[in-house]
Length: 248
Image 1 (cartoon, rainbow, N blue to C red):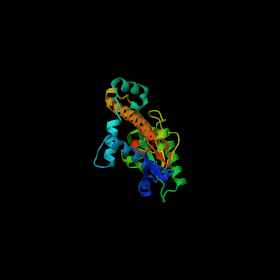
Image 2 (cartoon, helix red, strand yellow; image 1 turned 180 degrees about the horizontal axis):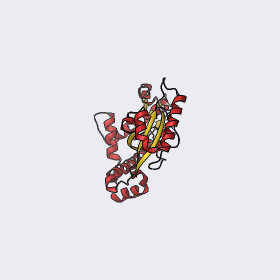
Image 3 (cartoon, rainbow, N blue to C red; image 1 turned 90 degrees about the horizontal axis):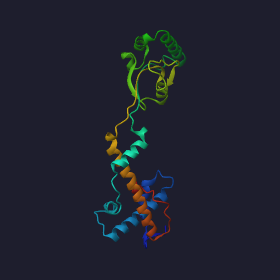
């Protein structure tokens, strides 16, 4: 392909071997070429500095360890991040829920099932104390055996349409309409709501420090790679940034 790094040609076989790792990319050939060229730049720098290793990957890792260094995130930096991203450090709300599921089957076509479900919903609106009884009688969910109880649910634990309705209901509120999901028709009632709690700073300080360290290291690594690429003699291709997997 007429590509050379610091006077050494990059052969097509190296690019062909690399391209199999980039099949999901928008332009697999370009990504493979950039990867091969960038690795060559790094290995040349490792050789220049006398950085050794059992194989190419180890030499590159050793080069990074020697040349890319960032300070540890201190407590004040972690605290600033914690305060600026308070929503990330809060446990989610929980809603205790119960439902009655009317599952569509060959024996119960949708129209007939919907009419039955509407009748049960109307009965519950008039006599809500019958929920557990009717769940045991009509629900096609195993929860029917325990009055329709689903326990405490957090966001992400149920299908989106069920979650969207459940978290809009007030404690004790029975939905005024049937909910249709891929499982069938539901009568839904929210019971007790447990508000999410703020996670103490001390509990997440180490996690924040790791995140800040990773961000700092990635910024420093990108800067280092830009310097190396700018200093290298590269013919036949122009690297567009350094978005290689090597810098993830």
